[in-house]
Length: 156
Image (cartoon, rainbow, N blue to C red):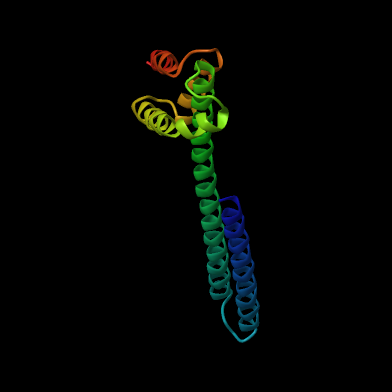
């Protein structure tokens, strides 16, 4: 995913550079037109439109970057919950090693991820806030069920 995201950002940067180059060409042509009797207001309108287009392109680039950041954050949260669940399986003896525990933890991690989403929607907190409270409870040695109850009580 990181390679794809990086490639997308490089392509967006290249498209922005091409758009800026095109806008500079438009601006040069507008300046040439100014010498042929066009009013300053007409020239200003053309340059303003070019700057507006450049701003829109930059806005789209920023929107795409924020979307990628949100997706990456969501994926990291899912992996974090899976790792916590796997560690719990190893500590309780339900799994012999971390590799087996990690594979077995995926369904429980998906369930916890859905639970953090639901709790974030029902509360004034973000999903990251809910997950952070849950992870803190697990760091103190609570089981997943106990950490869920404690997180729910703290958020309520």
